[in-house]
Picture 1 (cartoon, helix red, strand yellow):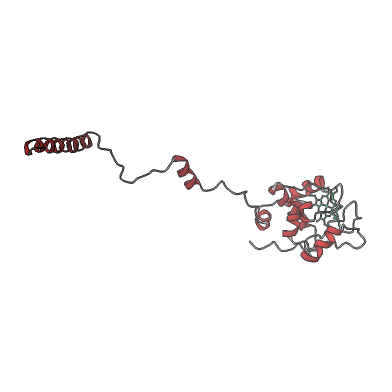
Picture 2 (cartoon, helix red, strand yellow):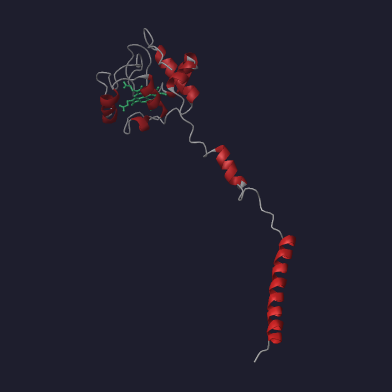
Length: 185
Ligand code: HEC
């Protein structure tokens, strides 16, 4: 049988061990006190840059045709058009059609509207929905002829340069007895 003295010795040892472990916990907590940040977590520089800069800029939107015309130079457009379009188009009133129809008075003229010219079915189709060569439609067609009328007979890659395109449009506008009003901004 275990006498009370023996029991006290064991109990004392257990208690002592517990006290020692507690003390060790407190003591090591004092030494290795982890330094907690005030706000847990931090933004990675990359994520921050993305948040500030936003998504990579979407393809720059095309300049509205009214803005192109506002800063256009018809005299420059005449030279550009003669070089870029003159192989296939005449510009003077009453001039004969070449490979393409004459462009005198083309602004606000019905699309595919020159009598006797054999337009592509694509452009004839387009004339049903878009009807006339507004500055807007001309701008689209001259930017990318096949993008506007997929099977157009106009074998021209398109004038992608906005400055030159604006000049051409301003020149086309001048080819009339009374030039069409500029589109509202
Ligand atoms: C390689 C020859 C060629 C060149 C270069 C060319 N065109 Fe054309 N263009 C055509 C043909 C062909 C058509 C008829 C298109 C069809 O029927 O699909 C046409 C049609 C057009 C029309 C529609 C006319 C209408 O009566 O509906 C416009 C506007 C036009 N061209 C403007 C231009 C301009 C502006 C340029 C220069 C930036 C140009 N084209 C360069 C051959 C050309």
